[in-house]
Length: 460
Image 1 (cartoon, rainbow, N blue to C red):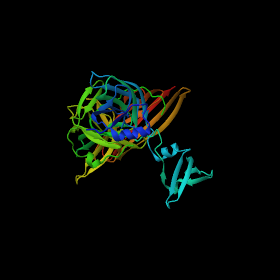
Image 2 (cartoon, one colour):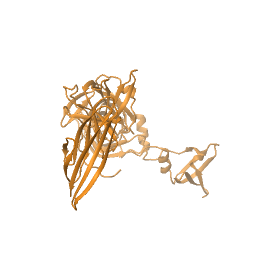
Image 3 (cartoon, rainbow, N blue to C red):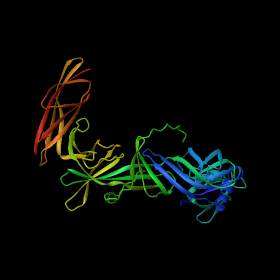
Image 4 (cartoon, rainbow, N blue to C red):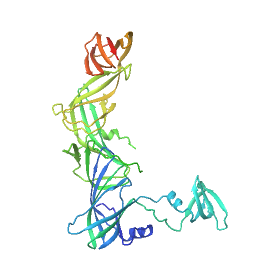
């Protein structure tokens, strides 16, 4: 059972003294709570709590809400349709107790400060800033005390308006007296989720054993105990807000272990929804990992890419696969990070590299950039330039590819072109990828090289 508390007062909006009294004399727990977490720093919470009402107009406080709640999103409904409660007014209080807040609210009030030897400084607090207290005694004398001198302070009471938890205060009108179950929903920032993938490459580098995890990061300011958990994968559109107001490292040893399937997946509107079939507690300031799907083996191929505009001397290496049933997967892949490992001869897992996966539906290709090939090098040179006319230029290029590996490789060369261009001469066959890109697929033998020569005429 969730032990979140709510308290009821009868006259006016509850002041700090009355609120403190009510905390002692009455509590009510939540019967049920569920949270739907999105990829976009958003959680939608639904919970049922038993609240106490009095017939007529009254006030009730709804405590232990997230500090990052959107108070404009709150929804309220009675479970019993035979009863009626109308919310007339809502106030969201988030001025929480802290030493700084107490001092700031005691400006122009009397306080007692003590240093480590027990000396007492008494007076009216005129200022608390710049690393010092400014006190005025009863005799009118003003003194400053550095904050590092003060080890204790006495206050006659807690200043009005400070609370210990973010709280919603409701002014209501009820047609009955007594307790009633209420459904309350709200949105909160500070919580999101992403997928984390661990892939283990086979010895021959033709198979990838892929495991998917959900990583839920809760910084919303609330703990959701024994909650029904749903995750939404997809990019929802949200209205822009008016401007009125960390990722932790995952344990690779834990992430590499095979896990039982955690979520049940289904299509939902234009998104994919993952529902955990058991209750889960998501603590504040916690990153929780839950398995998304069982480890699956898929066919992969290793590819080499050279893009001289990005890196003139290095060749990228990637692993690629088609997210299809025939390849071994065929499941929706939510956006996230993929780490690729390969086992050494002694069985230890060596990290090869990592890349991001976008939301990927079934039967689409996934390309993961792993790093740069150590034993393959490349270099582009401009070997000639002619200005044919004021509007037309001609450049001659050479791209040298060198393979120092023990096996033959094929390198995909991707060359960006600008303006209105035409290839007037080329030593190798090329393909037009788009209006500004051509590609060459070049086979390079072991311990050998290849040189691509081509001429580009550009007009403006």
